[in-house]
Image (cartoon, rainbow, N blue to C red):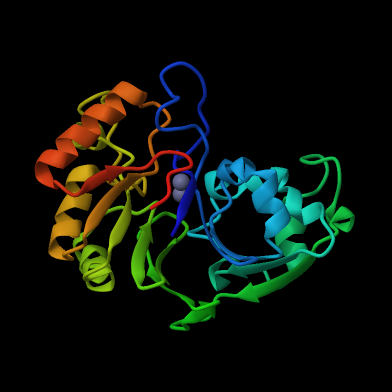
Length: 271
Ligand SMILES: [Zn+2]
Ligand SMILES: [Zn+2]
């Protein structure tokens, strides 16, 4: 099983009208015994319970990419300050970080943060994501392809106990990348897909600003991909912080008409 810790895109959002689908930005976790696979570190990581944190001794952390909404949760990630915890980071070579200090030292440093990397107690390891490698943790398998997003992104395929999840957030549809995604997602159980914009918003018909080239997609495009890839469940994800519960509910209903297997992500949902 995979738990959605956060499914909001771009920025956390709180308050009336935003309680149903949640506030936290992108993060998903799969735990087997005391080992976790963490996909992205948005503010969703803050929703891990004390019980979960006490139980997990090893985190294997992969990023779709490191735009702030997928990384900022690291600042509130308690396990990094705990003894007897291992954090294994896997980063794309595209970022040109060659050490953990280069990566985390850029985040944990004055004047952006009051303490630096020396205060960490967890055992940390830094790994460059290897191309075409199949990562295996406690029987769960993880592979990836490149996505279509500014500054690059990765799309992951995670197989947990025979259930296949495709994590395609911060992805903008395009004929060539769609073809690759369809092939990669063929027959998957879940396609977790970037549905940041309503189609009319994407086209600029809502506020006069076209979102073409901004790196995000729509439920209509996602649904087409889900159908072509013959996936069992299409999951709407990376909710626009400007879209409240009413808009998201309507989007889900419209998606259900096109893809009856549509699910809309919310914080703490287990799929
Ligand atoms: Zn994002
Ligand atoms: Zn992004």
